Amino acid sequence: MYLLPVTLIIMDTKMLENVIYCLKSGKNCSKLEWEDGDKMSAIRTRYIQEDEERQYMIQEDYEIYEKRGAPMGACTLHYHDFYEVIYILDGEFSSLVDNVTYFLKKGDFLLINRNVMHKYHYVEGKHVRSRRIILWITKQMLDRLSDGEQDLSRCFEERREIVYHFPASQEAVLRECLVHAAMEDVPELEGMKGKKLFDRAKLLLFFVYLNELVGKKAFAAGEEMQIRHELAEWVNAYIEEHMTERISLDALAEHVHMSKYHFLRKFKELTGMTVHSYLNHKRLIHGCKLLREGEAVGTVWEKCGFADYSSFLRNFKKEYGIPPTGYIKYFGGQGDEL
Image (tube, rainbow, N blue to C red; front, side, top):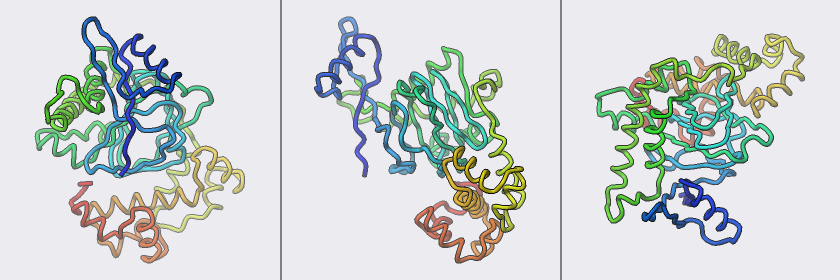
């Protein structure tokens, strides 16, 4: 199991001065304190290094942590069976999600649905000062939080927009929930054993409020903060239309009006992934969806375009570490319960 190092959420200039001093002097910065009038307090968040490449959860239900700087991991397209929220605490950040690159600034929220291809989009010199809260959470956890009262996954599943910037007062409520849930400890709870329950309460409040806010289109980020990639759109559209068929590089290149070698090079530049690997992932994502919807294992391989069951099984086990039957057993095989 990974042990995540600890860092600080900087609350004022005095705290910043202390952090800089510790970094320059080499002293331990994990227990810094700063003075706020007569009050001394220290807020520490779970922290993950920028070169961490892990894109899977260790915990069963959710993980939340702070990340800084330009990430060295997550630079190729990937996807996962849980939801992801990225909140920009400071600086700038950008991400390619499906066919669109989104350019984020302080205060923005990026909501990434399950099994959607995405990656970090590098922009030279732009993300050195980036600080962001990353939240990974499963569908099962959201269902447990709501206890049947409300579908808290609507903000991911039912919205076309995925980037939001809320008015300062609403953002402050959401930020407070995320920051407190990301803390290693909470000064107000010192000596108490209720941190886990406290975290869940904060997450429940966060998602109830978030679902109310994303229903208002005025809060969705404008198109000026995004770039649509026609190449990715064309490729995705072609794959969706011909999912059950054998898809050749020649056919894809012809569809996007490029020579095969120019197409291969441009696609790799955009996605960080080969066309063959991308197509394989899209087929597996579709296969997982069919399995969750109750499709028989013996027929899924054909409906997602694999040559035979053996090829489907080999690729499935390589990607997920379990066979399709194990996937169904693990996720219950009940509709879209993932």
